[in-house]
Image (tube, rainbow, N blue to C red; front, side, top):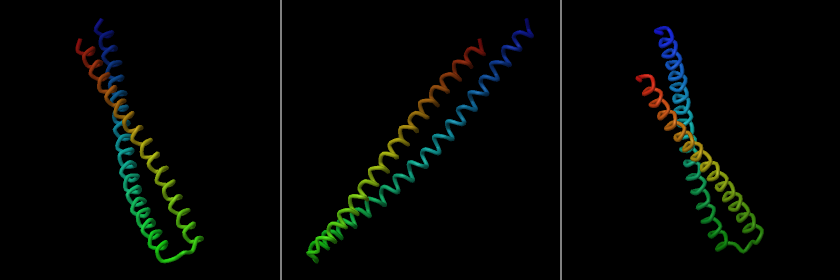
Amino acid sequence: MLQNDKDQLMQKEKEICAKAESVDNIKLTIATYKTKIEELEHQIQIFMAEKNDLEIKVEETLQDSGKKDFKDEIRVMAAALSKEMEMMENQLNRSKDAASEALALREEANSLRTLVARKVCL
């Protein structure tokens, strides 16, 4: 009987250790996503500043020059930058979604750990 209880406790301990390791992995994933999100937000700020600079240059160029080709080229560059910013925002949103999912998994792991701890105590 004691051996059976001991075996059950050891099995529960192994499960708890596995879940703790899973939680640690989730924490690492969350930290990685947070870093990536910060990097993407910084890049978006840089792109927005570049876009604003390009818009100012477009306005200055339009005022200083009547060259249609140059205006078209600037517009193409601004459009490309806007598209790149949109892609970065999409990537940022995907990273935020993944971080949210990782947080949800962490909460679930904590809940399961609590449940297992209660059962072990019983």
